[in-house]
Image (cartoon, rainbow over the protein chains, first blue to last red):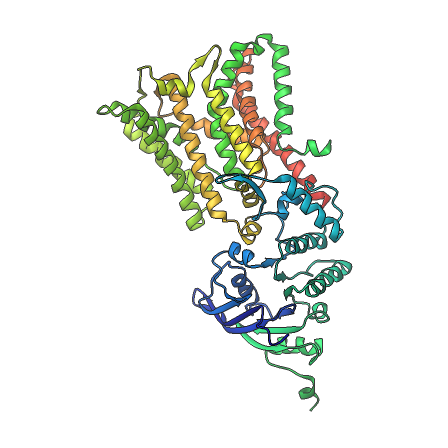
Length: 257
Length: 316
């Protein structure tokens, strides 16, 4: 397992916006079927890193290898085609569009030749309904709107979408914000199930207690730099929180001395 | 049934039926084929502009300059044709390119610098109408020779005109594209939520740019049709058309915030507005009331749109 090269390996990633360094020389790996908690205080550079992974902005320097290849994502389309799928509860579905259009947005199934391609609605309706039934979201038809779904259900659809398109890495940005207790559990279980299917996950979340039970490792960012990596087997959730709030590595034994 | 009621063109169909019924009762000649021809002729030019406007509104942008492009394109066409034997068809094509370039410029300023399209197109509207006035001295430009191009654009057939077919063809084509292609899906996503659309790999700026150009090109095309009908172009025309085209779009269920709207509804909206204009005359009301009615109808359309989208959100 460990001999295999990592699914994602970021090396020396730096990014500045208008002279302000958002990321400086950040390196870490995400293994196959690994759940990584990308954590840190506000302004640590988590969302900048996610934006780079998604192809929204290019890094100023550094390299990313993804799935055995050098990844130079120039747009979110490139990142999605490589197998990186954003799963955001707030912003991965268009409220005013129905289920099947959302499900296949940016990757519509078409038929026809050359420039005269039209949407294969029947295929897309069938495929999206199949997934919806599988994940247990209460929609009766593929042309129902998605605006009446709960945050958890919306996320479930995004995860179903990533399953359908065989994503290799899911990006969960604040997946448990504003979710009910039950929905939070459901989202976290999805992350675990993804790992069981061999899919890797990066979770960005402020609530360390929520994600502590499911992550394989925490990558802690602090003001644009990587502070450290912590495995839950080596430290308690409180240790992780203290490390983030102190801005330096904290471990319990040191405190006892 | 509720699904049917939520379709964006429902308001337009219902209002059109109500208005036709009222006017038919007040003045039976309202439904004569001569009058229907007049209504559809006026609706065609407004409707073609409105289709472009609706496309842009659905992507979350707006174009105030359509009225000035409606005048600019035929002015360019007639000025070119009048000078040193430039062929009329060539002049028409140049005029269409000029119209498209206005859209390109509107889109560039809006998208490249992030200025609101409302302000960018307000500026280009004033700029263009100023240039037209300076070029023409405010005088009507005419082209009195009968020709094939003008026949193709708006030849009379009985009580009706070819321009109505242009409106139906353009409206039908755009309605089909919006519903059945990736472009259409991207248009609705771009207007509904640009952030999500971008994350899912849609080139939001390209989609908006396409619609800016389509909007201006269609306004220019409608202007050429109007000119072909009366064999001249009045440099001070077009001002009201922007409001009417936008009104047609809102009647057609377009949300000013983007993401929703119907091309079929928009075309019906244009027919509704020109029915209103004609019906008021038939009913013996002063035509000066027309604007007030348009205002009232826009308000009504906004209320209906708001109620429908609120309904969509409330279930959330």
